[in-house]
Image (cartoon, rainbow, N blue to C red; front, side, top):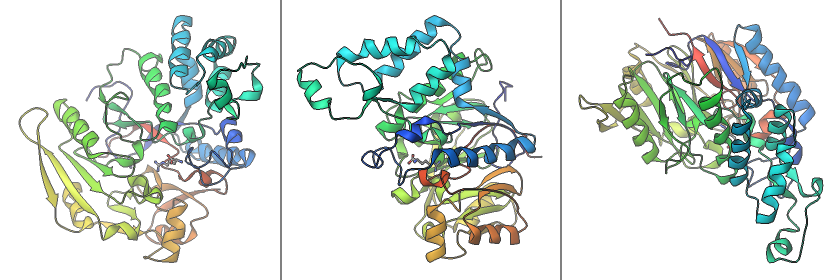
Length: 411
Ligand SMILES: NC(=[NH2+])NCCC[C@H](N)C(=O)O
């Protein structure tokens, strides 16, 4: 293990550094017509969403966790003006600008910001057509595009910092996201890890790259312990991406020996593994009862040949599989909503099983999931409860809204 500032060898080790994004003006650019494509089920009220998010950040700050903000790291990565200009071009190439004549105009617009943080905020927020004085002629593209409200689409999913990249061990999986609307998010992480003074020259291994072919998203990746990583095969993550990551991790000097691939239903409600399964203590997990039955788990186990692995289907029940790889005597699964049925469905929908551990047995949860929260408390878990009326409308909970960068090792 090298000391490059990244250290994630568990889901529960005492959290020291986390990356967040405070919801910005991009939320004010969600419209009913675009909601589905932009992966929202409703329009959050930004003012309250920010208050809720600040309460989330406060839990970290009050518990000795350094909070870093994506937008700030991004701006700090662009002090070099040549780099900033290259970043603007790269951003615009992926921004979906339909009319080639508008490209330079929008580039000049971004170049005109003297405050880089404001520029980054604007990139995230998107640009409404009415904000710019664009020359519109009679070309076919002008006629077709005239009715579309944005020159650059908003990026409302950025507050789910869990997904664009994942810290695994001392390295990063820079993810290839499934949907066009989220794919651009990874450009920010790419620039940050290569250019921010905190990471530049730090010898950070990349287990995956945003240009790799198959899709994978961070919500599917759970680092169980120093030897095992769980990855969901899901609506968002392809089996081939998991194999690529296995090959890369097993070629490096990392301690990881096994990747457990969880084949979960490919449905919006269960989009990522962490919407149905999270770790809360050394041997305690939350689980959505709906996926327990049909769950098939494969293990990819490293062999003595560098980068090679063998695949087995694990035939036991989930708690037995976890027991084996965690090397513990007992595993407790806490069911979202208590059991299959109405409460389970309701609370999973609002991320009742999407907890974030800040240390073993201590997790952040949404207030609204009171049935699951009570069960967690009864199991002796310490809860940090945060308000959740608006943030939850984006279909993500405390784990989705955070990307740990550094956790203490578990003794
Ligand atoms: N790790 C997670 N479960 N993230 C949830 C992301 C939610 C987001 N609206 C999306 O559909 O992509």
